[in-house]
Amino acid sequence: MAFVEKRGKNSWRVRYPKDDGGFGTITGFTSKKDAEAKADEIEADRRRGTFLDPDAGKLSLAEWTVAWFDALDVANTTEEQYRSLARNHIVPRWGTTRLDAISGLAVHTWAKKLRADGYAVSTVATITKLMSMMLADAADERLIPANPIRPRRRGKRRHQPRTERLWATPEQALTVAAQAAALVGDWAAVLMITAAWTGARWGELTGLRRVNTHLNDGVIVIDPDTGALHEVRGRLELGPPKTAESARTITLPPFLIDLLRVHLDSHDHPHVFVTAENELLRRSNFARRAMRPAADGNLHRKHPRPRVHPVVPGLVFHSFRHSHKTWMIADGIPDVAQARRLGHTIPDKIEHIYSHVAPEVETRLINALQHRWTTAVTSLTGSHGDTDSLGTLALPATAPQRRATA
Figure 1 (cartoon, one colour):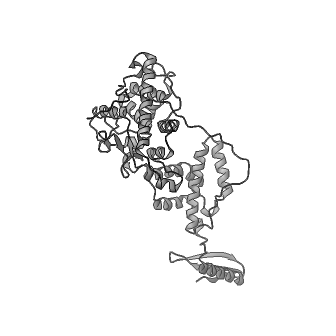
Figure 2: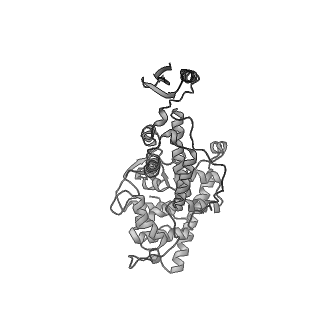
Figure 3: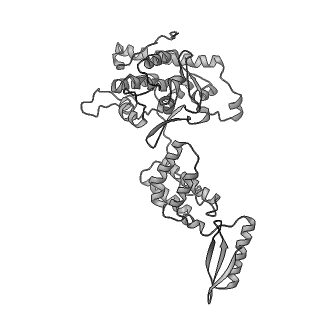
């Protein structure tokens, strides 16, 4: 239990047992009475379970992050994102600061400076949220009384204009794909077309393997355990998709079955989508070599090979997923069918459990996607006279009724 010791003529201190078996010390008392009152307060707090070790808050944030990350149990990609934010932003500013010296006002001032330095509002919000999580856990471990970061209810509102996500029409998606084929090869075009006509994510497609591609049944399967390719600390590895709902079976329109069949015949890698050198795909390399010039054009470069024109400047690979969603909305596909296809959770839990996609809805969806493909190909080839304007991309199955039986 806590006790009092005399240290000088008018100096007293309180000693209290610590969890590690040692003793902590609180100094600065000028009378025995005051010291005893503090010792009694410590014992009362211990009985109530509210005692905070004054030494605990002296731990620096950098020291706390080591223990915090050791206990963190999230997906590898999430942990890597957290470590990057902590390493590049949080620790350089707060690493030497004691936990009990961090104030909410100082953190909000720092966040304001980050925004003024040009960091995106969403990025600053993520950094602040991560720091709040660290301090909330420090409070749960009784290192500090409470998390000092609280939402601010005062001050001027930051009316950030909501940036509308870019999406592409089928004709635009096909044109971007054709330009990617001319830039790096047909495999890039097939990847883009598959993304646009299935709504699958980058990791789900780059992680897709032959064993999960059932073209005779007209589906691809996103495996719950190995259905996505993740890049962690520069290393590529298979792992679960983004959410539990992301594990799903995606039905393919007829033209895409034919296109994938031809594509798979062009290489023997276990993964469906690989580079021309039979290597797994990396997002940054693909964006630089294929996605950006195929969408933005390269007319600003001197003597580019080949020369490609702007289609939808700023379009990113994830935009194909937004495009797919937009097409389904325009085609009147029910929300439940959209959610199941994209691997989303329906907000209403009861509806999520009891709603199902009837076969006729799935048929209508596939027919709509096939029609969009046929219309896009007809529009593009008709306006240019032949398929040469689509680069080196082959265009099988332009007729809605065609379906491979092999």
